Amino acid sequence: MPANDSNASVQLEGRIRELAQPTRLADGRELPVLSFYFVQDLARSLGRSRSPQTVRPRGQSLAQVERAALALGVCPERYLRNFDTYSLDEQLRLLSSSVAMVGLGGLGGYVLELLARAGVGNIRAADGDEFVASNLNRQLHATRRSLGGYKAAAAAARLKQVNPAISFEPVASFLDEAGMGSFVAGSDLCLDALGGLKDRPALLRQAGNAGIPLVTAAVAGQSGFVATVLPGERGPADFFGAGEGAEDTLGTPAPAVAAAASLMAGEALNILCGREPKLAGKMLVFDLGQMSFETVSF
Image 1: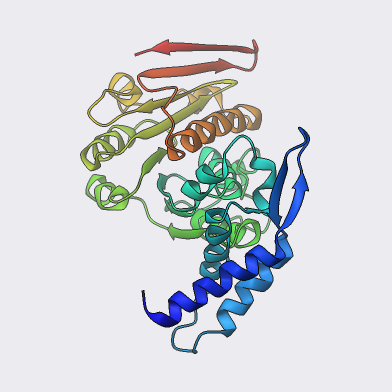
Image 2: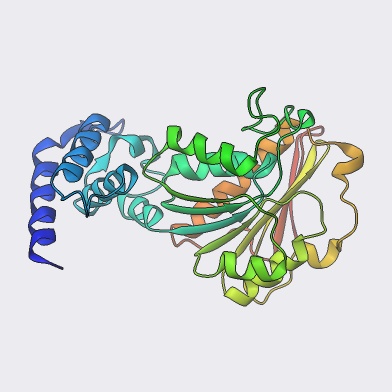
């Protein structure tokens, strides 16, 4: 590390220690917390301390401050309510993790929102589709103003408002199998948020070739499933084939889509934290009409 960068890191750590405030948790413990506004101020100071040729984008500076705080055992206020679900070490791991997601429609929009708010630091997402009026019933980024626009562009705009510290790479195109392979390479986890069944077997194969776990989900009517496929293992796409999806006849109401996305995000976050996947080789099948939840092996 160059001397200037080393000195800047020491100064940043010193400022974080000065500004952190002890916060008493509900169980009586004290946790040092760095105010949301102090994070913003420190990120701005990082930008001012560098020459115009080396200045970092605001998001990178925010991420640097948050990672530095967590490494010191200080919780950025943004993530305070994640505690104790994710320890400070796990939160730091999330900020350093990388996810590749295919699909930014109903499932993908909600999953992206949840991962960004949780603090997954690096997300790539691909979808070449544009919004149409029939998306308005369930897709988070579908609004009157976004109709006719790319889903990937709407997702990027949303994330800048939700969590600008996240490094987000939107890809506004449909991926063939070769494209999926290069897209997921180097990620820690692959998320299958595709609609229908046609492209799911290809994504399953490419995640396996890349040696990374795949979390997949699908919805039809008020029912759906979520599953995790480890590299080299078989997944739901191997059994369902690539025909028409049941969603085409049963529809996709918002509650079922949001439920599947939440379960999908929960499993993804556990895996990214380094925990054992709970749905490896299994499907969690739910039916909101019956309010039933069942886990089955495949």
